[in-house]
Every structure is written in C-alpha cells, then in structure tokens.
Image (tube, rainbow, N blue to C red; front, side, top):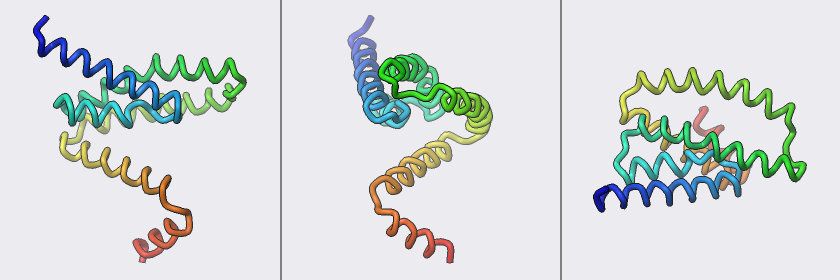
Length: 136
C-alpha cells in the first residue's frame, strides 16, 4: 500500500469517527459531515459521496439506536414507521439523485444544509418574517 493510499484510509477513518460521533451525540445523519468531507477533502464525486454515506451510516445508526434503546430513549413503534417511510424515500431519492448532474446535486445538498442550519440558529419569529417577505 502506498503512502497516499494509507493517508486516504486514515482520512476516511477520521471522517467516519467524526460523523459517528456527531450522529450519536446530536442524532444527525453522519452524511451531514461525511458527504462534504468526502467531496471537499478527498475529491469524491457528489454521487459517490452520497452513496457511500448511505451505506456507512447503517452500522453507525444501528449501534447508536441500540445504545439509546438500552437507556429507554427510543420509541420502537415510531421508529418502525419512520424506517418504512425512510426506506421508500431513500429509494425514490437515490433514483432521483442519479438523474441529476453532479453540480446540481451538490448545490441542492448545500442549500439543504444552509436552510437546516438557519432554521436551527434563527429564532422562529425571524424565520416567520423572512418567510413572509420571500412569499410576497
């Protein structure tokens, strides 16, 4: 294995550790960190980064969910219905993503992160004013 290959493996492990930590700590999908890191730091294509992230998050989500379940912090019935919708949505979303150009997909992902971040950071009344102005 070449030094470049070893470096890439180390970077992937660090990205995975950070994403898993954030997933367990904040309940966010690791893709929020993994996808940008793979694209920006490792030069992955947006489609490849998203596909990779979807597969990688399965064991992280299972282990985190089990930890919360053991501590009585998981509603199995709700999780089952969310999972059913999530599986269908993931199939439809993945098929749709594969029809898009890489640049458009990257911009949609960035827009999603921006909107989600603003919704978390800005008070509700500020968001309501912004939404009203945009809608006019």
